Length: 435
Image 1: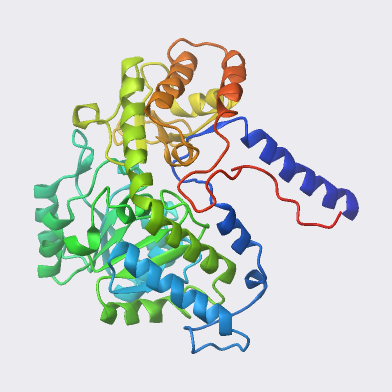
Image 2 (image 1 turned 180 degrees about the vertical axis):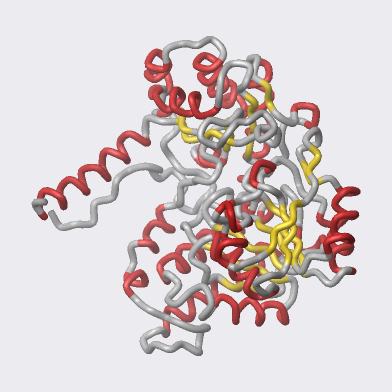
């Protein structure tokens, strides 16, 4: 393979991706667009350096400014979330979960969480599914009972199961997270049986920080961990927040050297910037996200699509979940919608397993509005998006016919909002080379 051709091809593909993204409607619930200041931090010299250990106690020299930035990120995280302690070193949400498992459980202990089909994340999965909790940390996984009609944890059945199983760790949170989890109703029950209580806020961290979802740390959880790039529009990174300082020391000992060595210092700086922006703009941003997701759910429902949770107002988060089995299957529609420049993902429904449907082509699609909200879209724009989707799914229109309209629509929304650099272009390719 010719090195120079490979070099040029890689850069060309990056630019092609940027140009294509400008012409799409991105509804991936786990994605967002960071601000120019966050991007600036990500390409800084911090990304070339090492800083193993805690600030002011490093195993490397040269960390004077790195230490100050990390301490600032920790303070900002505590302020945004009302936390007693914060660790901003995990390099992903999965490693944030793994740090929590490491701090509070031993291999062979029992974790209670949601099954994947009911919204649980792969980092909570059993060993036979390759999940982090089972395959990496060796935990026994017991599932929280799930109420399919309410699309939430079944409180009374879960109380009974907690008393029966007596898990070492109870974990709230999900990757399909429509409504706040019943933390107050279940946390003390678990603690009465000796469990620590944690909350995976990866998807809803921005909503929690914007005071528009729930407040797990005040509702009874010991630890809230998360990724930092979904409803919180920061870098791809992770963090763990604790209810008090004593628990922070347990998390710190689990994070380093347990799950990180160097911890991507450029991302820590980028996270500090994102948290500062969220202090300023997070409440308005979270409020508009929820307005948009409810509007999108309602508009899809009115177009004839079966929106899960419609009797409860569709959603209280950034996510809308749609059962598409009246018209086909989720994997097929994921591909068709992508052909029309509408980007979302297929998703298991809680009842798919009973219907012998697999994740390759499940019964649902998952939509998230974090990124389109960041671009300034409001409720009226959700009606346009719902129309494009229904034309492809319900009316079976050729996606190529819809694509040109999507591109024209997307062209009106290319600047970032809810950040100090408001008005900056979201998807421009930034060339930092001299030639």
